[in-house]
Amino acid sequence: MAKGILKVKAKAAGDKTKVKLMAKHIMETGLRTDKKTGEKIPEMYLKELKVMHGGKEVFAANMGTAVSKNPYFAFNFAGGAKGDELTMTWVESTGKTATETAKIK
Amino acid sequence: MSMNRRSVVKAIAAGGALVGASVLMPRIALAAWSEKAFSAEDQATAMNELLGGSPEASAEVTLKAPDIAENGAVVPVTVRSTLANVESMSIFVENNPTPLVVEFMVPAGTEADVATRLRMGKTSNVTAVVKADGKLYSASKEVKVTIGGCGG
Image (cartoon, rainbow over all chains, first blue to last red; front, side, top):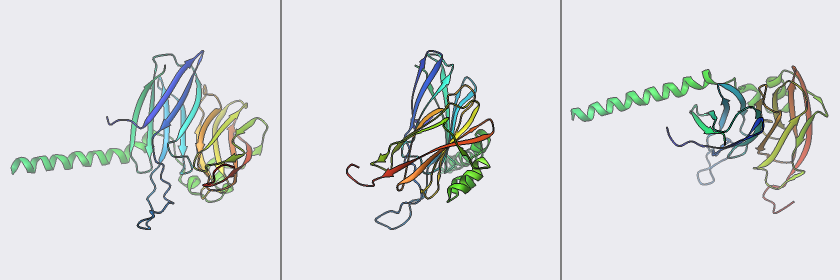
């Protein structure tokens, strides 16, 4: 698989897991124009993101174009232990999709 | 020549398969992304399309955002709620071209406490809407944006 766009820091703390997640993505809104050509830059942004832990959904986001460049999310969920794997699936507005994994530390 | 032709045919077949997968997979894999809500140009319409109603203000929803955002391209926002059975949390920026920014699903077991970063075109009210037990609650805050400024 191609190198992922997600940077995930997941840390088990007591009975819960703290997750900080950043996606490296330009989040092009489709509203900007190219200054040289005067043409609109087509939109290209992340639409959906889902995080699974042990087959259970722990977080999901449906995003619009007003999410900042390199979208960042922080959340906590109950359960999860060091060494467990998180599975993240994202979908871009172009229809491109990928699944990435990260370990809880 | 024949080798060439073969590799071209193979490449086309592989490409076709990839395109097919990328078109079909997202629809099956993830929860619905509301086209109408995300393209709505005023806040009330966006809320109605996404959540099917308008929320009432509640002290049990906390929206943490800066008073003044120096850079509208990155505005850090945290939404918290002490309500029970939170299903989803959404963030709206009233004066953005499309007010709906993001909708978070909060499954059971996940805390109703999410931090993210938004884009804001200009000074606007930011509203967080929390859906809990089928009802809608909200909290708002005005964030001043100084675009391209060097400090507020």
